[in-house]
Image (cartoon, rainbow, N blue to C red):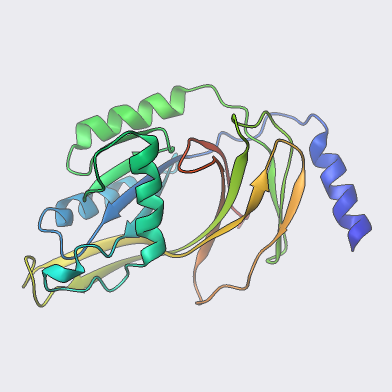
Length: 231
């Protein structure tokens, strides 16, 4: 097993043909108890239909006190958003917020501004590391120029279904909120410093989830690479 892993990483360190352009990652930070989030969720559902975008919904928990505990929220999603708050020099976290490729952010209702950020990210020069999945239990990240201070490798598992949640209390009482690509698992796999490295993937906690691996500058920085298993 060790020899196979070593051989795989050696191959990934070698120059390879140009890979398919990775999608632009659009992260929506939202909450079912947020009065203005329903429209932002609906906008993300539309973005998720585009093949050049990986749209991810991160429900946060800090509006639960308003009277409706978000059915998908996890504290680690709030922690991830707070890292962006610090990196992007914002005053505080808010919803609905969209972060594009870890580099820029906009209010989730500003669809025109989000479209510009997506275009800018798609046109930005990239030199991502090769990311290869070996079965369901391992991912190999290849060589590339690392961000200053090194990078981090994150595993995200999300539910690709469109789901509607009927809110029964709080500011959105009586409304049905649409969700798409709701993140269910978020795990830091380890550090990446520009050289090939392999990581074990835990078994999924639920059936039907899709896996994506992000290589990212540390503490809420820009996205360096995006990898998904081939269907």
